[in-house]
Image (tube, rainbow, N blue to C red; front, top):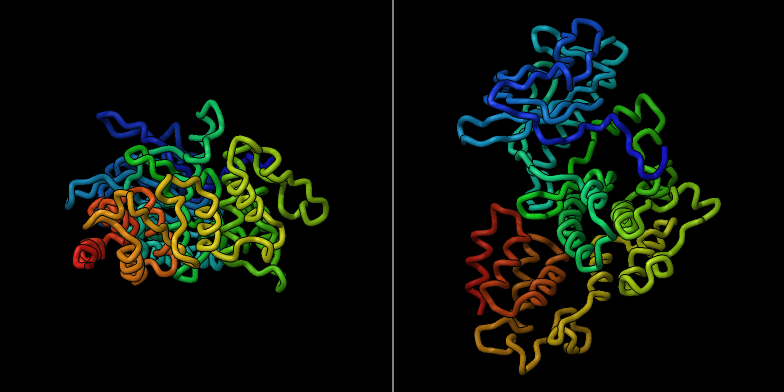
Length: 423
């Protein structure tokens, strides 16, 4: 399998082939052909089925570990996506809709995957960031489990890059990285890792052109770990070396996601994934971007990505915050933002002649107060968010709006109110 190929066992998201009539699933779903499974629909529930108070409309995707349905929430009159745990190699759906293991020897693995699926749903339900999948609710029924998510419309970053006539420029990549690093900072703050970042696991939303980091695939990892070689689920080029073996000297941590995210940027710039990390331990054939892409991107930006792709974990940025700080230090500055602030200051210093010096506008004192307030919700990354927001605008209302967008939705109204009370 080459670095740009991906395993076919993943649940794929695709536009529903809907019309006025119910979708005929016969041509799109695999015939499992074992046990009491129904050969007309494989393991998918029929359109029109009522599941947890939702009406199933069609199948959006089916893979080796789950099924994703398009459904209608009648209570709120909206379309949602429902992901069902359905590992087809371990279990099969009977005529009564119940999911049963194919063989008692599979039960332990099936149940371990089920627990992991539920734990992932519970974890995702705690997050509220525009670039993280939102889980509305989850439950167990029919011998399996389901989670309800928004129905996201868009295409994967992989397809987005393929459709472009040329590689994206640095500004485009920075706009991609900003929300993704914010989302990863939220995950890492809960002592969690994603461990599956790749172009096909990032969706570019049609409505906002905002990247969305797709699910962690936790159940998939558990099942494969218990039944197959680990390399089945690791993507060569995107998985750092510490994911290939449980070696005390190569622990996984935030730097693991740093590597994968940098590999995504490498792919966007060169059209290729970096060489597999395990091979690089023996013979490192990686060509630094500072040479390969010189002249098309700033040297500092390329050097930051090169460092993030270091084979040894201790040579990379150790946190998403550190990666963001290095990217920010390499960012092209507008005229006001280029002026030096007080020694040791990490926040831009407004010029006396700039709009930021006007009464009621954003100045460095206000930014410090806003950073302290935002840190209550975002932690250390708040300073980076404040700095980037100030570079985009010096007008207070617009500045506050940018800050509020970065905060979890439940606290946005209160945060906006608190910001407006700042002196």
